[in-house]
Image (spheres, rainbow, N blue to C red):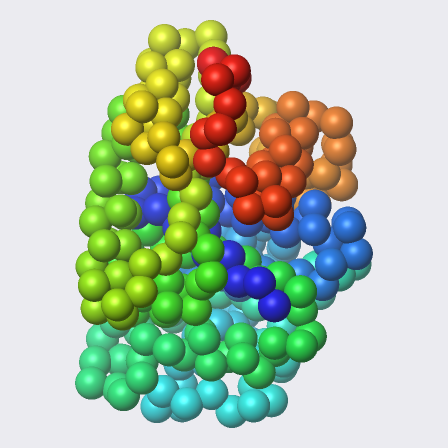
Length: 266
């Protein structure tokens, strides 16, 4: 299993869209893919028609066993989606209470890792969609992850959120004595606006080795897909946004997502 975490300490930058689109593309290739919703707001859960306020079986259940994860538990929490090969472990709004409840619990930062270990041979990929809040859920995701995807909206305030995320990564790396590899993904790019173009150029300049060399464009089809509970490629495989994510996936799978070309999309 390959585990990719999608995170940024700023909301509204395209985390859920990134997770859903990449997961959908892999599932369409025949890969067995698991989406895990670690955000108490449950955007990923709502995307597939479940209500995080009422869902009975969720990520929250993993945290109810004093830091241990019974071997059969993770399987009971998984729901199918509208796409074959793509499964979902939904979120509950109760996950917002974990910060208080998990104080002093031994191994609280490794619960997601332990859950995924029980599913290791059942999936080819797992995507962890995260809350923007630094706490037990995000720490769990970073501890479990093999590679971090950081969507960054191409606008000034989102760049500030990136700085916070990278500071968090540095702290985690220091405590774990292991640096997590990551790819910065410029999102919501609109070449018609100077602000978007300038922000993209700033990402390229400041993070040349860690930024994807292209950008995900603004695409209304993403919103249309979410309304129907479909992965974007199932709604329209040829839309500009899906084509960009397909290119991103190819680069990630090749291990070469950084800026390597002089010819950029801006």
